[in-house]
Image (cartoon, rainbow, N blue to C red; front, top):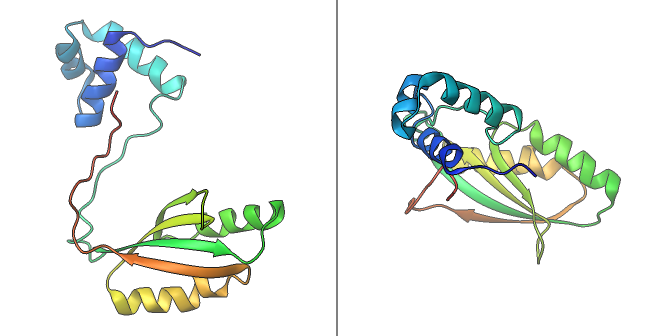
Length: 153
């Protein structure tokens, strides 16, 4: 495992705050010149510490502000079913996150939709067509209290 020094961590923290920072701006944040910061940045990308750069969009303004956390329990499970479920879920644009979890349910999905009616149709016509899903439990988000995009490092 590679070890990150304090400068690497400072770069990662600065990028989590604003991934549009230029190399020059990052260099100012960590008190180095641009060349070593650029080299560190490329190394962090190559080693997979930085997976990708994204823009955070406003779901409300894009009419996708109705959020649902959906727990899924399979009626049966094996390697082929898990693989097929993963493939199918990755192809559904409304599902923005999916986790294989332990406990009473097998998967946790985060779904974005315009409204409850859309979600009902989605449930019946998309998730409802997957025959090995035994049950689905929907949790509707009323208000977002905290959302952090980075991780504490």
